[in-house]
Image (tube, rainbow, N blue to C red; front, side, top):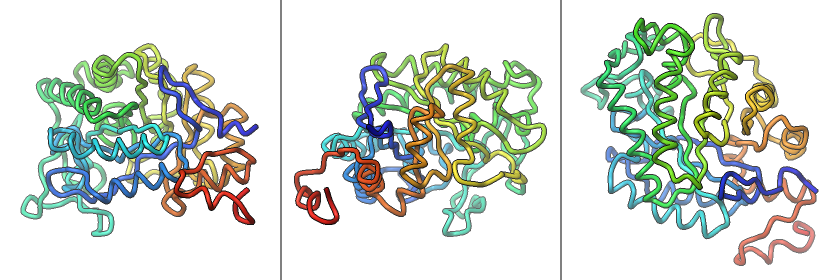
Length: 359
């Protein structure tokens, strides 16, 4: 019996298997942040492909929280209505629909990756970014340090985003506190040089991210799960690290967070990452063991046997795939076949589940 294709219960939600679609920014909306046909096909094809949980790209909680002017959002009624048919289709294919909510902080207002990814000037569609301090990311423009009113407004925006996500029909919500975006910026001493209650000590640096996670947990139905994505390390001396991540995840568990999606990096332009297959899995294993919370592992997990090993050996409760699913939207179906698991096919495709290429 494959552990990768066992169901995973998170509160009242039963995810049919442990292959999760990692949030992958598509930069394919208009300036209104409204998802469209691209998002339906991109997300829907991974549901047809057999993934258990399909997470959207980072959906911005406000216009200034977008990485680019082409990001999806969850700050308006129009966006809620546009997400609904996408959510409906994901459910129709047996997948659990999830949304990641985010604020890009000092890494906002950039061009799309295929247009260079650099910060945009005001006359090219950019805007003044926000951060915990006026410390820039590499050669990006310095952000405006957030005041108390900005922090309060951001917490409220995350809470409203959770309300809207539920109105759209999502069953799982993930708070983005990784990759050098706003919440991660507050956690890391590399980007947070504040001297008030939101900076300095670990407990102070965790304060704002925990306020956001508490607001989302309170706004989200008690029977539905809340996930948090973190970067377990800045991969740089003097930055955020695994020990601090474990302390943070213990606090998340106390708030009622159900699973931590464990990534790393993104907050230091000069990070030195030791890349290799499954290079972030040890972070997931340590957090699962020492913080006592469920985790999902992510990062160069590409092969079915590799993913099975991660789950079967207790290093994570699930795996999140990104590039592997861009290359093959049907990765989960191919993995199930390789591992001898039975993954139901859509009625329309069942004729392919027999013969030399099927069972």
